[in-house]
Length: 145
Image (cartoon, rainbow, N blue to C red):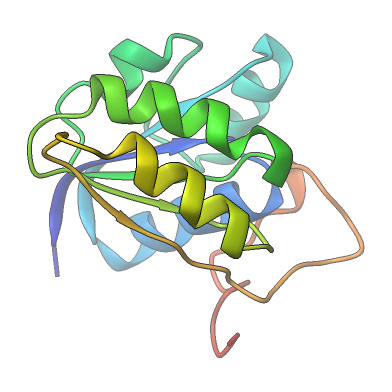
C-alpha cells in the first residue's frame, strides 16, 4: 500500500539500507532516494537496490520528499537535520534512527520554529554485527521494538 510518493533516506548504511529495502518490498512509496557522502557507498546501495536513485546533493535528494529519514551517525543528525529542514517541502515528515533522543529532539525542535515540516523522533532497536548497505535486509526491522 503506497503511503508516500517520495521517501528520501540520508545515510544508506545497514539501517537506512534496510529501511529502503523494506519500503520497496512493501510498496510504501513510489520512489526511494538515497543521499550519500561517498560515491562508493552510493554505488553499493544502487547495486543492492536499497534505493531507486541516488545523489550526493542533499537539496536535490530532498526535493519533493514526503518522508525524510535521517540514518546517519547520531552525532551528525543535528547538522543533517538542519539541512533537511531547510530544503524540505511544506508538510514533509522528518524522522531519524538515532539511539539517543533527549538532546537530539531538543535541538531539532528549536530548528523547526516557523518551519512547515514535522519531526518524529524514532529509534529502531535492530542491527547486526555488520555495518554497511551490503548487509541491509528488508526484514531487519521486522518485529524489532
